[in-house]
Amino acid sequence: MAIRLENVGIAVRDLDATIAFFTDLGLTVVGRDTVSGEWADTAVGLDGNHARIAVLQTPDGHGQLELFEYIHPDAIETEPTLPNEIGMHRVAFSVDDIDEALAIAARHGCHPLRGVATYQDVYKLTYLRGPSGILVMFAQELKKD
Image (cartoon, rainbow, N blue to C red; front, top):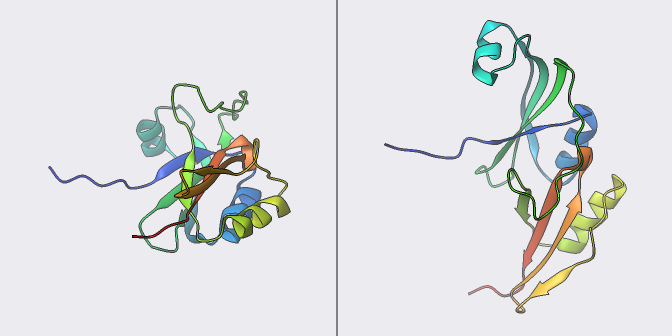
């Protein structure tokens, strides 16, 4: 059986603000739609499922995010995920300039949880809270083989 990762889906409070954050980082919108109907109820497992969605692609063409803002049923607010919680955790991006990525994130009011760490002189990395409390990791490779 062939298998490949299609995308990572993330429910958000404000679709447009989240699109702005990720497109400023370099992702591109490859599609937007509003979905509803019996097929959507069946696929997602929610009666009356109605959402605005957008699919964004990384510049390398290999990664995609599917963002969705629920119209119905109402979105359920929860506490933001903590780094040590079981379940969906974070979305990670390799960046060639972590300072530039952090400057872009800061323009959206998003800052590192604690700071930027260096792992064995190989990576600089950090976690930050993106739109809707999404945990985002940036990693910049310091040495290339």
